[in-house]
Length: 105
Image (cartoon, rainbow, N blue to C red):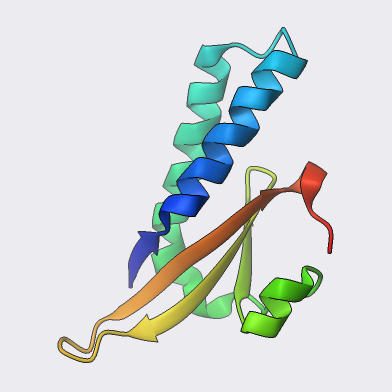
């Protein structure tokens, strides 16, 4: 299954780590780079397992939209699965992200 990531997700990740580095002086760019690499590697792997993750359970907007939820590197990701009509290919579309420290209704 193909994984597509909404621009908003990239922005959420970048903003979280930018703020984190200002709040935690010991968190350096090299560490953040490694964290992001692991995070994006996990997102790429989502395509292999997207159908096994449960529907979102805590964030009301995600529940209302019928999103599934995937957790990696302390980030919660909301995604939906759809089929491209022309090709019949399945896509896991990651539409939103929220770090565990900020995850609430």
